[in-house]
Length: 469
Ligand code: NDP
Image 1 (tube, protein in one colour):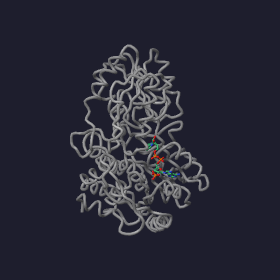
Image 2 (tube, protein in one colour; image 1 turned 90 degrees about the vertical axis):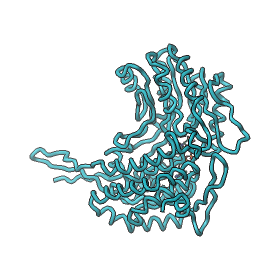
Image 3 (cartoon, protein in one colour; image 1 turned 45 degrees about the vertical axis):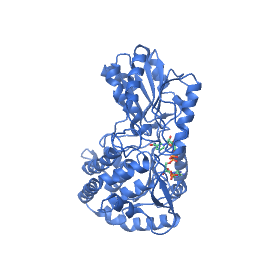
Image 4 (cartoon, protein in one colour; image 1 turned 180 degrees about the vertical axis):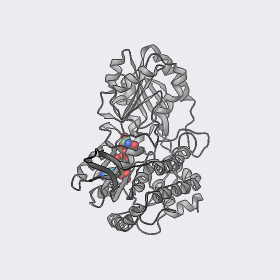
């Protein structure tokens, strides 16, 4: 298999409840998704229970090999996967978008296969001897959002499988086809039952979280849903990794070269058309370079083509859904009312068929404007002027979320000093939002808890066991 039509056919339901899925750029129907219910979830849990002991009993190398074969399968299906992702999510094929996302899935599978989780000898002093091992949990739930529907799924699935667990994944109701297609491709090479998908809405997600079969819930999405998952997991004492997004600050120090950083600032904020958990969502710029940074950023932003994702020229696309479009629109309108200066954009075509919101920069905003303090999750960046770095640090830390942050400076040591004072799980210097499969990633405050990636990520989908003696 592996043509686009074959990929779609493999996930199109032939019986049972289903619903149509539409392209957010054109409003055209692109396919049909199943709508699974509690009985389908129960069947998936039974199949996972049957498959997991055999998977866990394989030696580690066999699971590493399986992840490499899964990466091969993703690479063999890369172009049809990217096309489906582009049509369903809206992100363009080109730029750091659909092809990039599919490539990252293969890369993450391989990196997860390559990461060692050695047995740790924690005490060996001649009297006492103890080792720390990491054992499979059993069954892991992988609940994902609509912004990076393949890559975030792989972030949850790959480590869970590597550590000997079975996984049941639930894609977002906004992007079910992307998740189902990816899992169908992975299942071309994985043993039956170790990885399954159920498609449905938040109620199905809630049913998964309430099901005592799951020893671990991997969740990426909103803080509101994360709080519900925390409550629900209490009953089963299920382990949680929660990546709940944020409102990342970037602080530009007075010594930067504005033209040199403008491109990286832009992509830090506008990657995936701003629909990224760890995107730069509010920018604080020192007085000395404020006008030059705003101008340089405006120049870059104006030159970036936005449009239908399947047009190879575009690097920015529509918002994935109308709900998110409405949020961005409201925040920009409030920013204008607060006295914000529209540098670029801010003038959506409200009658257009697709969910396009133009690339928007709003400067001269008061630091308490809603566009600054609420997460926009779209292509509208607020820019706030500051004159004292202490003030910028205080503003960056003032919110109750802390996924990422960035500091921009020609002086790396000065930037590192500022970085240590920011309340965020990751602070980037002279970039924003880049993730790496060997570098742990996770939030502080209401951005969630638990680490993904690297050896810490693998340990988080396992249970520790001490062998003492
Ligand atoms: P949600 O948190 O509602 O959805 C994320 C996932 O959780 C989806 O698969 C969803 O299912 C599922 N879900 C919903 N309710 C429950 C529940 N009670 N128990 C278990 N799972 C559940 O995010 P939204 O898609 O509604 O987006 C809302 C906001 O979240 C955005 O505006 C943005 O600010 C933020 N967000 C953050 C992301 C991130 O990367 N951290 C990604 C996406 C959004 P379903 O969608 O099918 O209802």
